[in-house]
Image (cartoon, rainbow, N blue to C red; front, side, top):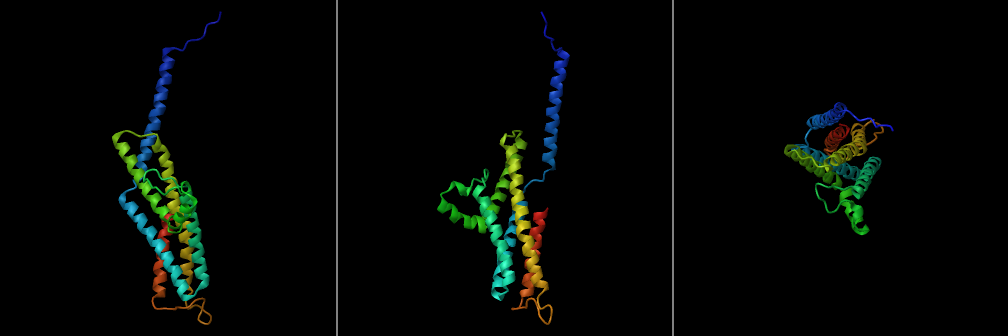
Length: 230
């Protein structure tokens, strides 16, 4: 009659110590990653929102300026970019679920269709979903910092980390690359082609201060696109 081999106490202790070593190494790696991650402070939140609103205002001013000067090619280009970014923000607001900021409006798909379509205007074309995501990222960062200080890390914090990275990607990359880079290119082209060439200029200066306005709007778009590429 065969006998089943018994594991020696030494091998069992070796397996336990190996498991503890893996857990300790994983814990050290998580701690190192948390210390390497820059905190989402109030100043960073305020700076991000200020630059975002400046970029939005700059784009609206460029649309109004090209409509006033009747430069319809530039007007159509800027308006197309604005509608594209607004459509993307509306799609993000339709599926976005913010846990920490506690918005009652998001996601829009949880509302009735007439209310959702009405809220898609401020959250989409008004880009309020970007503000909501940034505030949610800030509150999630503060929650994780508080949990790390108290020594209690809930299981949802790991999911919120991935969610925060996704939210920050949408806020910075999409708004910076899809919106600010094309707007910056159009505004700079309008600025440098003003009264050039002399015989048949691409565009002309219609009012005093137009060149100065376009240069300011272009540099604001550069700042927003640089934030998106970081």
